[in-house]
Image (cartoon, rainbow, N blue to C red; front, side, top):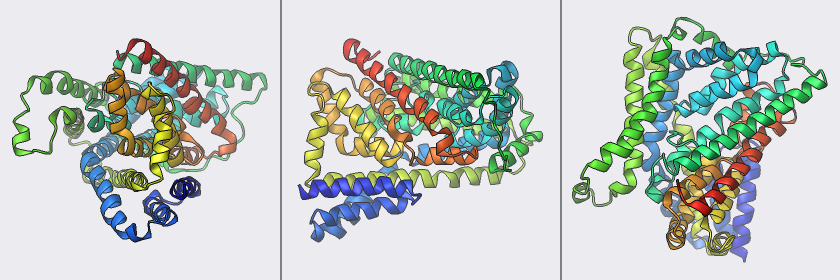
Length: 469
């Protein structure tokens, strides 16, 4: 009981201190150490850190470093080449200020589904969204929710093939790929998009009845404005086809290697030289790595002679992957330490028995809770799979549930309570928009937690009734 209480105390402190802005890089090992001390396992303090914590952290880095690195590089190349700006401007020109909310949501979703970083999208789209909302006289407080709907929801967790790191994390645990349960993913995405747009349009209509308007705001010259001004220069004049081509390559090449190339290759010979490699569990990651490499190379080659400073862009993208990777890896190390404590058995059994006979519900609860506590969908997902992934896979096999359905439910669930107020992405988004939690958080919560929860329940229901499709 003491060990279980120690785990709960450390989790609550992790959530509170993360909300106060302390980096998870420091919090994760400190809170893991606190849990060990409070549980009375003082004699195991140093071995648990050097063996359990660091082994889990380093294992995660080894497995997912290429995805984080290539994803960050691709996002930076899309931003600095002007491709992201070209695509977003094209959507704006087609839809216009009369459909400002839909325009912003679609611009964000196209970029994030193509593999552009959530933060790059927020910086790139905010100046456009601000001008659209001001022209349409829509309250500025709805801008963050519009960006969040297009960036933090269906393109991150539901749409099949999305290169978001959240969609890649379950692959080595379940032996799946990023296209897992495509039919259910599309249904979930449609519910998120449709429900989110309905909510935002209803808030817009209510504001018009009150004659609220855009509001009086002191617009500060932020990094987003500077980025937008830079992209309005020569680099932004990129042909639309070249701007969209890298996005198509990420999804297309990923699908090509996932469904055609790797399945038709005899990969058993790899285990002779690499006995620890399981090809059937790794081809999903390999396909994503190849797709991101080709997309990055295409962007560089297609814009040769047009880059302001290609070396600076590459360096910025490569350096930009380190903090997100090690933040998540530290949380995985924390989860490994927690899982090694005696009190975790009580918590594990309670979670696994939430819905006996249906591991999908138990998995959804575990992912939501841990994502909420850590304020990170990737962090919560990684901790849950690190500690419970093998249990869920076993339970699913016993219940006749496909790993693909487990994959999709896990990713969608992790994209639920991850956007609680202490979430770093939400804090950053509000900072970019120069708004506060009080002004905008209710609408953010509605489109990133409320509507996705409905989508998750729908997918679990359909998956339980009809299986994975």
